[in-house]
View (cartoon, rainbow, N blue to C red):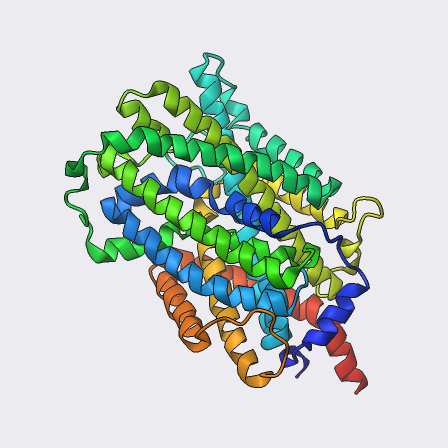
Length: 470
């Protein structure tokens, strides 16, 4: 059946040449792109929530567990990205390894990951901006900083729209339309700002650590550490966005592995240091709030530090939003170029060299989600969508090692069976640690994707058309 037919790597690369994105990114750009997406909502928000609700001070082990799963996945991605330096990330790799149907499901789940995560990040950005205005005595209107309460949830007052979230999303969209290199420079500046902010936090927090706050270190046991790892996995979402830039790399064979693994290792170390310092200066029980780092600094008397952290959080969330929308558009672009989505969406701007139609569509959709949707209900779906992609990609690279052992691999993942199985088992373990309601919603989303593929993608697929001719 055509849905199980793979697309040969040579054909994928040849097809991409007909409608190729501009090469403008180097290794440093990719490392900063990864840091730009990884360090954001996770470190500025979820660290506190994960400690308070799930793991206590043992949140540092949660970050180690999630980080280990991501290191396995990053090594897998690095091999595939160097082999297939084409836009589309896990979607493209799966097309080459496991066939069209599996590739569609991966692409569909990545749509869920990036769109939902981007909307959540835009809302988080709005929250920090609103807080700064309130601290300055110029509170923004409630109705225009909160999404409507569509579900009539008790105790929640709905607004008209989250206008700041909409505006920042549209601004980032315009940046991406104008060109990848300009967006990369903008990202670089903001990454430097937030790294300086985190350095300041660690410098202020380190002398004030009270080891008594680390007792008990595992108040919820190892089960809490595992659940915490599954929940805060959102903090790592986006490192795979580096692989979506494969087609725009000047030297993908060398730069993609550096970007993927380098950004992930840097961010994992930062997460562990910040989590340890945070739970060392404040009891983990007090950290369930929207600004745990700023709150912790205020609690030890550094009010000016809390303001600087808020500014850094805004910079951090902006870069995350930029990279998430960037990654979303590149996956959409690859699927449209393969005709599984309307091919007109893959049109490239003659001047800017970007998939501008897809970028605008994605930006508008994310803006609507951020401005009007109750994101706290669906944001957890981003985790399971990403983890499922990691598992399938790991299976794919093992299949390719057996099915196509002689294909040129500019970067070979070391100890492939250990790493591949490690990625499958660790990511699978995190998936089963997620709440049952997450699985239910994930199942509904996947079912919708299957319907869309059956009635559109399958019929439009070149592989299907070629099979009919044969």
